[in-house]
Amino acid sequence: MSKTDKLFLAALTCFQPFGPKRLEKIGRSFTSWQKAFETNFQELAKTAIGEKVVDDFLKWRKDFDLEKFFSTLEKESIKTVTLEEDDYPKNLAQTYDPPPLIFYRGSMKDEESLLAVVGSRKCTPYGERIIKTIVPPLVMAGLKIVSGLALGIDTLAHSATIEAGGRTLAVLGCGIDRASIYPPQNRPLAKRIVESGGCLLSEFPPMTPPLRQNFPRRNRIISGLSKGVLVAEAGEKSGSLITSRYALEEGREVFAVPGNIFSWQSQGPNRLIKEGAKPVLEAGDILEDLGIIIEGAAAENTQDKRAKDWSGMSENERILMINLSSEPASIDELHRLSRLDMKIINSTLTILEIKGLAKNIGGGNYILL
Image (cartoon, rainbow, N blue to C red; front, side, top):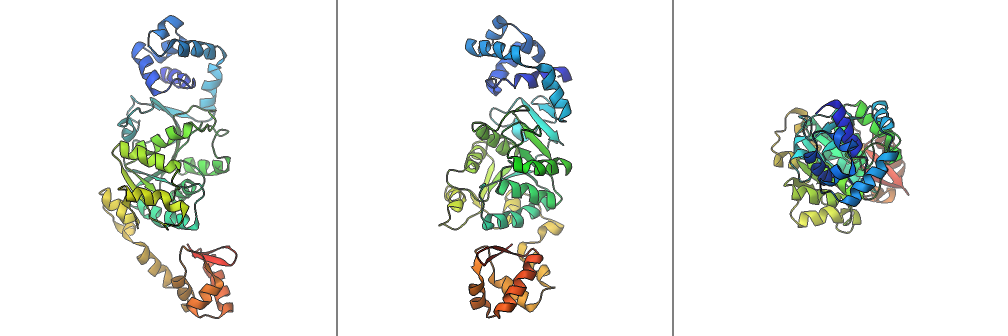
Protein backbone atom coordinates (compact mmCIF):
# COMPACT_ATOMS: atom_id res chain seq x y z
CA MET A 1 0.00 0.00 0.00
CA SER A 2 1.38 3.42 -0.96
CA LYS A 3 1.88 6.19 1.57
CA THR A 4 -0.84 8.23 -0.14
CA ASP A 5 -3.31 5.36 -0.01
CA LYS A 6 -2.62 4.86 3.70
CA LEU A 7 -3.45 8.51 4.28
CA PHE A 8 -6.78 8.13 2.53
CA LEU A 9 -7.60 5.03 4.59
CA ALA A 10 -6.76 7.08 7.69
CA ALA A 11 -9.09 9.81 6.44
CA LEU A 12 -11.92 7.31 5.95
CA THR A 13 -11.61 6.24 9.62
CA CYS A 14 -12.49 9.82 10.58
CA PHE A 15 -16.07 9.13 9.52
CA GLN A 16 -17.34 7.49 12.70
CA PRO A 17 -19.82 4.99 11.11
CA PHE A 18 -16.95 3.44 9.12
CA GLY A 19 -15.90 0.73 11.56
CA PRO A 20 -13.77 -2.34 10.72
CA LYS A 21 -16.62 -4.28 9.06
CA ARG A 22 -17.75 -1.47 6.75
CA LEU A 23 -14.17 -0.60 5.84
CA GLU A 24 -13.57 -4.25 4.98
CA LYS A 25 -16.52 -4.18 2.56
CA ILE A 26 -15.31 -0.91 1.02
CA GLY A 27 -11.78 -2.24 0.65
CA ARG A 28 -13.00 -5.26 -1.30
CA SER A 29 -14.84 -3.03 -3.78
CA PHE A 30 -12.15 -0.51 -4.74
CA THR A 31 -8.62 -0.81 -6.07
CA SER A 32 -7.40 1.98 -3.80
CA TRP A 33 -8.56 3.82 -0.67
CA GLN A 34 -8.19 7.12 -2.49
CA LYS A 35 -10.77 5.97 -5.07
CA ALA A 36 -13.05 4.85 -2.26
CA PHE A 37 -12.76 8.24 -0.58
CA GLU A 38 -13.40 10.20 -3.79
CA THR A 39 -16.09 7.98 -5.34
CA ASN A 40 -19.75 8.83 -6.03
CA PHE A 41 -22.96 7.63 -4.39
CA GLN A 42 -23.71 4.89 -6.92
CA GLU A 43 -20.30 3.21 -6.65
CA LEU A 44 -20.14 3.40 -2.87
CA ALA A 45 -23.69 2.11 -2.50
CA LYS A 46 -22.64 -1.08 -4.32
CA THR A 47 -20.54 -2.04 -1.29
CA ALA A 48 -23.72 -2.84 0.68
CA ILE A 49 -22.82 -0.64 3.64
CA GLY A 50 -26.27 1.01 3.57
CA GLU A 51 -27.54 3.87 1.45
CA LYS A 52 -28.14 6.16 4.43
CA VAL A 53 -24.55 5.63 5.59
CA VAL A 54 -23.32 6.46 2.07
CA ASP A 55 -25.48 9.59 1.96
CA ASP A 56 -24.22 10.70 5.40
CA PHE A 57 -20.63 10.08 4.34
CA LEU A 58 -20.95 12.25 1.22
CA LYS A 59 -22.40 15.08 3.31
CA TRP A 60 -19.61 14.67 5.85
CA ARG A 61 -16.96 14.61 3.10
CA LYS A 62 -18.00 18.06 1.85
CA ASP A 63 -17.01 19.63 5.16
CA PHE A 64 -14.01 17.45 5.92
CA ASP A 65 -10.70 19.32 5.58
CA LEU A 66 -8.43 16.66 4.09
CA GLU A 67 -5.35 18.89 3.96
CA LYS A 68 -5.75 19.91 7.59
CA PHE A 69 -6.05 16.26 8.60
CA PHE A 70 -2.87 15.29 6.74
CA SER A 71 -1.10 18.31 8.24
CA THR A 72 -2.16 17.30 11.76
CA LEU A 73 -0.69 13.82 11.34
CA GLU A 74 2.64 15.33 10.30
CA LYS A 75 2.66 18.08 12.93
CA GLU A 76 1.85 15.64 15.75
CA SER A 77 4.36 12.99 14.54
CA ILE A 78 1.49 10.51 14.23
CA LYS A 79 2.20 7.47 12.08
CA THR A 80 -0.07 4.71 10.86
CA VAL A 81 0.19 0.98 10.36
CA THR A 82 -2.31 -1.13 8.44
CA LEU A 83 -3.44 -4.71 8.87
CA GLU A 84 -1.62 -5.60 5.63
CA GLU A 85 1.81 -4.43 6.86
CA ASP A 86 4.47 -6.50 8.62
CA ASP A 87 4.71 -4.07 11.55
CA TYR A 88 1.05 -4.57 12.45
CA PRO A 89 0.97 -6.42 15.81
CA LYS A 90 0.50 -10.13 15.07
CA ASN A 91 -1.36 -10.82 18.32
CA LEU A 92 -3.91 -8.16 17.41
CA ALA A 93 -4.16 -9.31 13.78
CA GLN A 94 -5.22 -12.76 14.99
CA THR A 95 -8.23 -11.42 16.90
CA TYR A 96 -11.80 -11.16 15.71
CA ASP A 97 -12.49 -7.86 13.93
CA PRO A 98 -9.02 -6.22 14.21
CA PRO A 99 -8.89 -2.51 13.31
CA PRO A 100 -7.73 -2.07 9.69
CA LEU A 101 -5.50 0.84 10.69
CA ILE A 102 -3.82 1.99 13.89
CA PHE A 103 -2.59 5.49 14.66
CA TYR A 104 0.53 5.60 16.82
CA ARG A 105 3.20 7.85 18.26
CA GLY A 106 6.55 6.52 19.35
CA SER A 107 7.98 3.13 18.46
CA MET A 108 5.66 0.47 17.05
CA LYS A 109 7.25 -2.95 16.99
CA ASP A 110 5.67 -6.29 16.26
CA GLU A 111 6.21 -7.78 19.70
CA GLU A 112 4.57 -10.85 21.12
CA SER A 113 5.86 -10.59 24.71
CA LEU A 114 3.16 -8.19 25.83
CA LEU A 115 1.14 -8.37 29.05
CA ALA A 116 -1.85 -6.17 29.77
CA VAL A 117 -2.08 -4.77 33.29
CA VAL A 118 -5.43 -3.18 34.13
CA GLY A 119 -7.47 -2.22 37.16
CA SER A 120 -9.41 0.39 39.04
CA ARG A 121 -9.08 4.12 38.50
CA LYS A 122 -9.57 4.53 42.24
CA CYS A 123 -6.96 2.07 43.42
CA THR A 124 -6.09 1.58 47.07
CA PRO A 125 -2.63 1.47 48.69
CA TYR A 126 -2.94 -2.32 48.30
CA GLY A 127 -3.34 -1.94 44.54
CA GLU A 128 -0.39 0.43 44.40
CA ARG A 129 1.76 -2.06 46.25
CA ILE A 130 0.67 -4.87 43.91
CA ILE A 131 1.91 -2.94 40.87
CA LYS A 132 5.17 -1.84 42.46
CA THR A 133 5.89 -5.42 43.57
CA ILE A 134 4.78 -7.43 40.54
CA VAL A 135 5.49 -5.25 37.48
CA PRO A 136 9.28 -4.66 37.82
CA PRO A 137 10.19 -8.40 37.83
CA LEU A 138 7.93 -8.92 34.80
CA VAL A 139 9.75 -6.13 32.96
CA MET A 140 13.15 -7.50 33.98
CA ALA A 141 12.10 -10.87 32.57
CA GLY A 142 11.46 -9.26 29.17
CA LEU A 143 7.71 -8.57 29.16
CA LYS A 144 6.37 -5.30 27.77
CA ILE A 145 3.41 -3.81 29.61
CA VAL A 146 0.21 -2.68 27.90
CA SER A 147 -2.40 -0.55 29.64
CA GLY A 148 -4.92 2.20 28.95
CA LEU A 149 -3.36 5.41 30.39
CA ALA A 150 -6.29 5.79 32.80
CA LEU A 151 -5.78 7.06 36.33
CA GLY A 152 -5.08 4.53 39.07
CA ILE A 153 -3.73 1.09 38.18
CA ASP A 154 -3.05 1.98 34.51
CA THR A 155 -0.94 4.99 35.51
CA LEU A 156 0.99 2.95 38.06
CA ALA A 157 1.62 0.14 35.55
CA HIS A 158 3.01 2.51 32.90
CA SER A 159 5.15 4.37 35.44
CA ALA A 160 6.51 1.21 37.10
CA THR A 161 7.50 -0.15 33.68
CA ILE A 162 9.39 3.02 32.73
CA GLU A 163 11.12 3.15 36.12
CA ALA A 164 12.21 -0.47 35.68
CA GLY A 165 13.75 0.43 32.30
CA GLY A 166 11.08 -1.34 30.29
CA ARG A 167 8.85 -0.59 27.35
CA THR A 168 5.18 0.23 27.77
CA LEU A 169 2.31 0.72 25.33
CA ALA A 170 -0.71 2.91 26.10
CA VAL A 171 -3.92 2.25 24.18
CA LEU A 172 -6.28 5.23 24.13
CA GLY A 173 -10.02 5.52 23.62
CA CYS A 174 -9.55 8.89 21.91
CA GLY A 175 -7.13 10.61 19.54
CA ILE A 176 -3.40 10.49 20.33
CA ASP A 177 -2.75 14.10 19.33
CA ARG A 178 -1.53 16.07 22.34
CA ALA A 179 -4.76 18.05 22.80
CA SER A 180 -6.96 14.93 22.79
CA ILE A 181 -5.02 12.72 25.22
CA TYR A 182 -7.26 11.65 28.09
CA PRO A 183 -7.18 12.05 31.00
CA PRO A 184 -5.38 15.42 30.68
CA GLN A 185 -3.56 14.77 33.97
CA ASN A 186 -1.65 12.00 32.19
CA ARG A 187 -0.34 14.05 29.29
CA PRO A 188 3.10 14.29 30.96
CA LEU A 189 3.05 10.49 31.40
CA ALA A 190 2.13 10.05 27.74
CA LYS A 191 5.18 12.12 26.83
CA ARG A 192 7.39 9.98 29.09
CA ILE A 193 6.07 6.80 27.47
CA VAL A 194 7.08 8.00 23.99
CA GLU A 195 10.44 9.41 25.16
CA SER A 196 11.32 6.14 26.93
CA GLY A 197 10.89 4.11 23.74
CA GLY A 198 7.27 3.16 24.26
CA CYS A 199 4.20 3.85 22.19
CA LEU A 200 0.81 5.56 22.27
CA LEU A 201 -1.73 3.97 19.95
CA SER A 202 -5.39 4.15 19.05
CA GLU A 203 -7.78 3.07 16.32
CA PHE A 204 -9.38 6.51 16.65
CA PRO A 205 -8.07 9.38 14.49
CA PRO A 206 -6.63 12.62 15.88
CA MET A 207 -9.07 15.02 17.52
CA THR A 208 -11.43 12.19 18.55
CA PRO A 209 -12.81 13.00 22.02
CA PRO A 210 -12.92 10.36 24.79
CA LEU A 211 -16.50 9.26 24.15
CA ARG A 212 -17.94 6.64 26.49
CA GLN A 213 -18.61 4.17 23.67
CA ASN A 214 -14.95 4.26 22.62
CA PHE A 215 -13.61 2.53 25.71
CA PRO A 216 -14.92 -1.01 25.16
CA ARG A 217 -13.25 -0.82 21.72
CA ARG A 218 -10.06 0.43 23.41
CA ASN A 219 -10.24 -2.49 25.87
CA ARG A 220 -10.51 -5.02 23.04
CA ILE A 221 -7.24 -3.71 21.59
CA ILE A 222 -5.50 -3.86 24.99
CA SER A 223 -6.38 -7.54 25.34
CA GLY A 224 -5.80 -8.24 21.64
CA LEU A 225 -2.21 -7.01 21.78
CA SER A 226 -1.36 -9.14 24.79
CA LYS A 227 -0.51 -12.72 25.66
CA GLY A 228 -2.48 -12.30 28.85
CA VAL A 229 -4.30 -9.80 31.06
CA LEU A 230 -3.52 -9.13 34.72
CA VAL A 231 -6.34 -7.55 36.75
CA ALA A 232 -4.97 -5.97 39.90
CA GLU A 233 -7.93 -4.22 41.51
CA ALA A 234 -11.41 -3.70 40.08
CA GLY A 235 -15.03 -3.42 41.10
CA GLU A 236 -17.55 -5.91 39.75
CA LYS A 237 -18.63 -3.47 37.00
CA SER A 238 -15.16 -2.23 36.10
CA GLY A 239 -14.07 -1.81 32.48
CA SER A 240 -11.11 -4.01 33.40
CA LEU A 241 -13.47 -6.97 33.45
CA ILE A 242 -14.51 -6.13 29.89
CA THR A 243 -10.83 -6.37 28.95
CA SER A 244 -10.56 -9.75 30.65
CA ARG A 245 -13.68 -11.04 28.86
CA TYR A 246 -12.18 -10.04 25.50
CA ALA A 247 -9.01 -11.90 26.52
CA LEU A 248 -10.98 -15.06 27.31
CA GLU A 249 -12.83 -14.85 23.99
CA GLU A 250 -9.51 -14.66 22.15
CA GLY A 251 -7.95 -17.52 24.10
CA ARG A 252 -5.56 -15.33 26.08
CA GLU A 253 -4.58 -15.94 29.70
CA VAL A 254 -6.38 -14.05 32.48
CA PHE A 255 -4.60 -13.45 35.77
CA ALA A 256 -6.02 -11.82 38.90
CA VAL A 257 -4.57 -10.73 42.22
CA PRO A 258 -6.83 -11.82 45.10
CA GLY A 259 -7.84 -9.28 47.71
CA ASN A 260 -9.87 -8.63 50.81
CA ILE A 261 -13.33 -10.18 50.35
CA PHE A 262 -14.87 -7.14 52.07
CA SER A 263 -13.20 -4.60 49.76
CA TRP A 264 -15.29 -3.55 46.75
CA GLN A 265 -12.02 -2.92 44.87
CA SER A 266 -11.20 -6.62 45.13
CA GLN A 267 -14.62 -7.88 44.05
CA GLY A 268 -13.61 -7.99 40.38
CA PRO A 269 -10.38 -10.02 40.74
CA ASN A 270 -11.91 -12.31 43.35
CA ARG A 271 -14.85 -12.99 41.05
CA LEU A 272 -12.51 -13.73 38.13
CA ILE A 273 -10.56 -16.22 40.27
CA LYS A 274 -13.81 -17.91 41.28
CA GLU A 275 -14.68 -18.21 37.58
CA GLY A 276 -11.32 -19.75 36.65
CA ALA A 277 -8.77 -16.92 36.30
CA LYS A 278 -5.31 -17.79 37.55
CA PRO A 279 -4.55 -16.29 40.97
CA VAL A 280 -1.31 -14.31 41.16
CA LEU A 281 0.69 -13.91 44.37
CA GLU A 282 3.97 -12.90 42.76
CA ALA A 283 5.46 -12.16 39.33
CA GLY A 284 6.74 -15.73 39.01
CA ASP A 285 3.17 -17.03 38.82
CA ILE A 286 2.67 -15.13 35.56
CA LEU A 287 6.10 -15.87 34.10
CA GLU A 288 5.76 -19.58 34.80
CA ASP A 289 2.33 -19.75 33.16
CA LEU A 290 3.57 -17.88 30.07
CA GLY A 291 6.59 -20.17 29.81
CA ILE A 292 9.13 -17.41 30.41
CA ILE A 293 12.38 -18.52 32.03
CA ILE A 294 13.38 -16.25 34.91
CA GLU A 295 17.05 -15.34 34.87
CA GLY A 296 19.36 -13.03 36.78
CA ALA A 297 17.84 -10.15 38.67
CA ALA A 298 14.34 -11.10 37.54
CA ALA A 299 14.64 -14.32 39.51
CA GLU A 300 14.76 -12.47 42.83
CA ASN A 301 11.52 -12.83 44.67
CA THR A 302 10.17 -10.04 46.83
CA GLN A 303 11.37 -11.60 50.06
CA ASP A 304 14.97 -11.94 48.81
CA LYS A 305 14.96 -8.31 47.69
CA ARG A 306 13.53 -7.17 50.99
CA ALA A 307 16.19 -9.16 52.87
CA LYS A 308 18.91 -7.28 50.95
CA ASP A 309 17.22 -3.95 51.66
CA TRP A 310 16.98 -4.81 55.35
CA SER A 311 20.70 -5.53 55.70
CA GLY A 312 21.53 -1.86 56.29
CA MET A 313 18.61 -1.13 58.61
CA SER A 314 18.63 -0.41 62.29
CA GLU A 315 16.97 -2.84 64.67
CA ASN A 316 14.07 -0.41 65.21
CA GLU A 317 13.49 -0.10 61.45
CA ARG A 318 13.37 -3.88 61.11
CA ILE A 319 10.87 -4.19 63.95
CA LEU A 320 8.51 -1.67 62.36
CA MET A 321 8.91 -3.21 58.90
CA ILE A 322 7.83 -6.57 60.30
CA ASN A 323 4.72 -5.02 61.80
CA LEU A 324 3.75 -2.91 58.76
CA SER A 325 1.70 -4.27 55.85
CA SER A 326 -0.54 -3.11 53.02
CA GLU A 327 -3.33 -2.68 55.56
CA PRO A 328 -3.23 0.70 57.40
CA ALA A 329 -1.80 0.56 60.91
CA SER A 330 -2.08 3.38 63.44
CA ILE A 331 0.81 4.54 65.59
CA ASP A 332 -1.01 3.18 68.65
CA GLU A 333 -1.27 -0.21 67.00
CA LEU A 334 2.42 -0.16 66.04
CA HIS A 335 3.24 0.76 69.63
CA ARG A 336 1.22 -2.22 70.89
CA LEU A 337 2.80 -4.63 68.40
CA SER A 338 6.39 -3.43 68.53
CA ARG A 339 6.54 -2.29 72.18
CA LEU A 340 8.82 0.53 71.07
CA ASP A 341 8.73 3.97 72.64
CA MET A 342 6.36 6.40 70.87
CA LYS A 343 9.18 8.87 70.11
CA ILE A 344 11.25 6.08 68.56
CA ILE A 345 8.27 4.92 66.49
CA ASN A 346 7.67 8.45 65.13
CA SER A 347 11.32 9.07 64.26
CA THR A 348 11.75 5.60 62.71
CA LEU A 349 8.61 5.97 60.60
CA THR A 350 10.02 9.25 59.26
CA ILE A 351 13.21 7.43 58.24
CA LEU A 352 11.22 4.66 56.54
CA GLU A 353 9.18 7.26 54.63
CA ILE A 354 12.37 8.98 53.44
CA LYS A 355 13.64 5.60 52.23
CA GLY A 356 10.38 5.03 50.37
CA LEU A 357 9.52 1.94 52.41
CA ALA A 358 6.51 3.25 54.33
CA LYS A 359 3.83 5.84 53.72
CA ASN A 360 1.62 7.99 55.94
CA ILE A 361 -1.84 7.74 54.33
CA GLY A 362 -3.39 10.24 56.73
CA GLY A 363 -4.93 10.14 60.18
CA GLY A 364 -1.73 8.79 61.70
CA ASN A 365 -2.04 5.55 59.70
CA TYR A 366 0.90 3.94 57.90
CA ILE A 367 1.29 1.25 55.26
CA LEU A 368 4.24 -0.68 53.89
CA LEU A 369 5.26 0.16 50.29
